[in-house]
Every structure is written in structure tokens, then in C-alpha cells.
Amino acid sequence: MSIDEDLDALVKQVEDRTHLARRDVEGRVQPIRAALDAYRLACLGEAAREIAKNHQLKEPSPPALSRKRAAERLFELVKNLPEVQQLVDESRPAAPAALGQIGSGSETKSLKPDNSFGRALLAHQPVTSGAEENSEAGEDFAEQEEGKSLVEVLPHLIQALNPGKLILLGGPRGKGRVLPGALGDWSEWIDTSRQSQQAVYGLPGRIKRGGVVGVILFEKTISHKHSEPVVEAVRKNQVALAYAGKGGSAALAQALKAVNQQLGSAVSSS
Image (cartoon, rainbow, N blue to C red; front, side, top):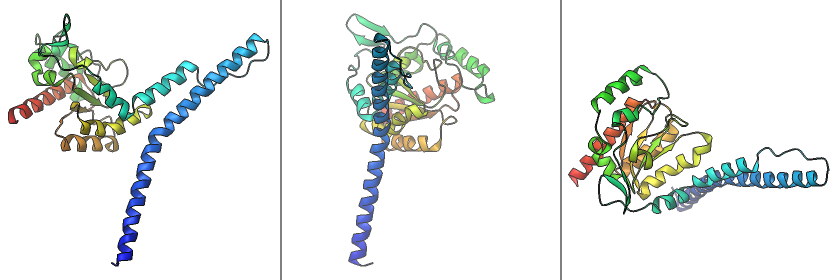
């Protein structure tokens, strides 16, 4: 290959990488731009309807979204920007001196949940009643952990939380996604819906920057294009990783224990 051909190949690589970088930026900015324009139209539409009403004129058709809904959509998109997520992580309070508490001074909160670890996890509704993740399996696990606090069952994970964060990718959606005690306070659920694409794509970068102590993948509910970059980032940065299938309570509980074990092994080997 001649020098000219080498230079052409180099220029082509630069152009390709520039194109990919531009596409990535536009992919993050375009939804925000559209949401901002939708909010603008909602505000103008509401103002026009108010003016028409006050002057007894024919009111124009309402905008596609209300101001509140447009603002909520814009907020969700901006909130999931990697830079905003980093700012949120950096603004978290420092880790407490005592393992069994979160907070400082007189305003402390015990990590021990009102119910046992296993029973509390059964409040997490599975997305499916598949044979491997049925409620009976969850009951068996609950009986094994009856009467134990979070610190007793997951000591290494609880110690790593605050300011570290546990990320759960995929799994059940909606109000059923609740973990007990400190796990709920310092965990973050990210689904792979269209509204959460930026959070999914930004997750590998967050893992690389630090602040993520563990990741639980609901691998049966997400595609490889979403999970593979996360798995790669986890392995490169030695972050705890566990799998929880479709999101059943027993599978989730076992995944939490697996993360705890990995964090404990990392401490022992350091």
C-alpha cells in the first residue's frame, strides 16, 4: 500500500469516527430539541386559548400536549443526560461513618427494614410467573432470610452504597419496582423503553467514571444491543455484575446476594 493510500485510509477513519460522534450527539440532542419545541407550542397554544377566551373569540384547537405533560417529557430527557447523571452522583452526601445508618447527626435512618429482607423483597412484583421465578420460589427464599436485616444479609453491598449506586437495568416497570430500606434509597432502575434510551446509552460512561458499585441485568427483558455495552463496561472497570432473568423476586434476591459476594471478594483481594 502506497503512502497516498495510507493517508486516504487514515482520512476515511477520521471521517467515519467524526460521523459516528456527530450521530451520537444528535441522537441525544434531537429528542430534547423536539421536546423543547413541544413545550414551546404548548405554552403558545395555552396563551392563545386564554386570549381568545378573554376576548370572546373562537378558541384555537388545543396543542397535542399540555404544558405540564410537555414539561415532564422535557425534564425526563434532560435528567437522563450523562452529564446530569454525573452531577447528581457528585452531589450525593458523603458515606456515613457507621455501617448501620444513612445520614448524619440526629437525622439518621436505620438500614434495617420494617420487614425481613426476604419478605420485603416479595413486595417486588415479578413481571412474569415463569416456572423458574414463581412466587413459591420467592416464599422459599423469604423463609431462609426471615428475621435478618439488610446489613446481615448484604453487608458488603450496603457498605458500598452511599455514595455508590446500584443500577438495575430492564425488568419490571411501574410502581412494583421497590426495594427495601437502603436498597431503595440508593438504587436506580433503568428500563429500555424509548423514553429511557439516553439513560441506557449513558450507563457505560457512568460506570467508567465511577460511582456505580454494582449492576443487575434483567437479561430476559432487554436486547443484546442494550446489555452488551454495559457488560463490557462492567468487566473493564471491575464492577459487580449479576443477572436476574425476568425480574422475579427470588431471582432478584439471589442477584443481590451475588453482587454482595462479589463486592466482598473484591475487598478481600485488595
